[in-house]
Image 1 (spheres, rainbow, N blue to C red):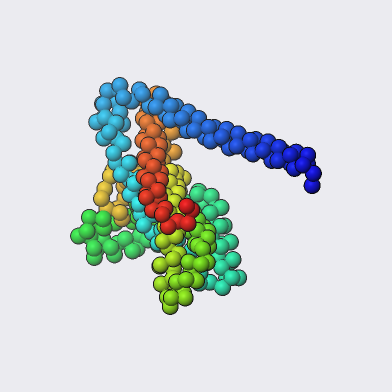
Image 2: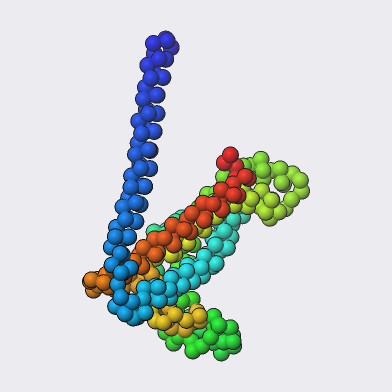
Length: 310
């Protein structure tokens, strides 16, 4: 190849690099601009609530009294989903990546990916029509035998439309996200790490504990935080499953609500100050989600030493 041809090829490559670099920079700036625009919109539309008479806010005791119960409900439902889905998702991902035969692993992978494609309203309808009535029988037993615990205090809901049911439905919804991302991270574990552990006489589980899980820790945290973000913002499934009401510590009693469901159920008929209340609630949810992602980013940064990425 002549010097002229090499120069032309190198120049074309540099031009492509510049175009790609510019495109990625523009995409990043666009994302930041959209995020900033959403934040400004929410803030401006929520300002009337700050200057309103507390008696005019829903509940008659001010915005903080109105928003506090649904913030707690949002956090509790998401926490239940994460507590259920994270260990289950990690276990399924480990089975697919390190235990199941190849054909069975492929089938499991397809099923998990299909679960992620199911619309949330379908999950909500399933939770309302199938899961809630079945769980109501168990809630009665929990209230009778474990009612001394605040989270199982009766009277148990007769319909099963409780915070615990909503959390279980959310767990099923975020399970595909956590499983798929964890599986991909597990498969990226360097073979040398796994072979070295096995060569030292470790069993398969010991190899996973010493090599795979430490390597995948940042990815697992990222997967869990993505699932948490989905659970925090989920609307229709929670709106269908959860029967709204006053805040209660019991997970099996009727009551409680989440921010997303509160907005979805009341936004179509809202106007004036009530509309500003709902937008302010959306701003609170926006801040909570942003804070969760920032904390997750900080955790990942602290635990990336053995991630294999550096």
